[in-house]
Length: 272
Figure 1 (tube, rainbow, N blue to C red):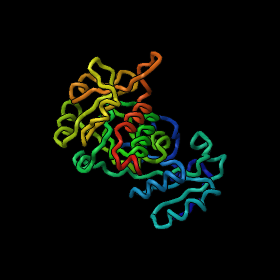
Figure 2 (cartoon, one colour):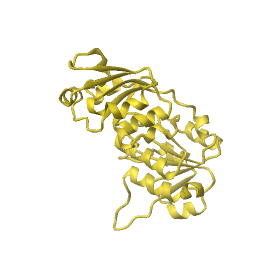
Figure 3 (cartoon, one colour):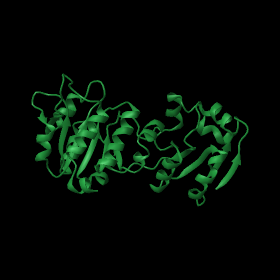
Figure 4 (cartoon, rainbow, N blue to C red):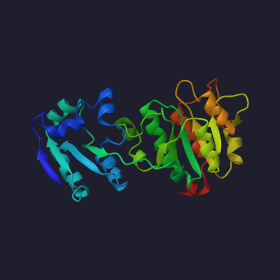
C-alpha cells in the first residue's frame, strides 16, 4: 500500500474518479472488464472479501485509519485529499469515507451460477440502477442464491447500484443471461420453473403459488415501465401476481421482488 497526498486536481492518479456523476463518462470509465467504483469503507471491505482487486483508493485524511488495516496487503495506491478538493473533484461531499476504483472480475458462466442454486432472480431490461441495487439487497437478505440479468439490464456494478445494495452486489453471484427464448431453454435445462411476476388474466396469486412452489424457481421480473416482454412471458412456465388492494395494480419492481422472495423463501433461508 502506497499513500500519496493530493493537492492538485490534475494529478494523473485521479483520472478514474473525474466527473464521476456524469453517466456518459461512467460508461467510458467503467466498461465491463474494466473498473467499477466502490463507495464507503463497508462496501470496499465487501469487495475485498469477495476477492476483487483494488486499483486505487481516494479518501479524506481522517478516514485513513479506518481503511488502512484492510488494504495493507494489497498493491494499491491510496490518495489522500482535503474535503474541499474532493468535493471539487467528484461533485459531491464524500461523507461515506472513501471511494475505491476496483477491477471488475470476470463474469461466471450461467451454468456455474445455476449449478447449486434453488432460488434465482432474473431481471429483464431493468434500467434504473437504484432498482437493480435494491433487488440485489433483497436477494441477499431474503436468501435467494443468484441473479441473472438480460443483455440490456442496467449494470449492477455502477456506483449507484453498488451503493443502494449496500455492497451486496459484491456478495450475490450474478451474470448475464442470453435473450429469450434461449434464456428459457437454459433455465429449463438446469431444472428451473420460470415464474414471471406480471399482470395477466391467467396469473396465479403469489401466496397460492408459494404454497406448492417447486424446488427450483427462477423469479422473472420486468422493466419499470412496460414490464416483461412478450418473449419473456412466452418463456415462463407460470405467471404470478401479488394480490393488491384499493385499486393499486402493482408495486415498484424492487418492492415486488422483496415481497415475492419472502413468499418463496426456502426453510433454510427462513430460519437464518
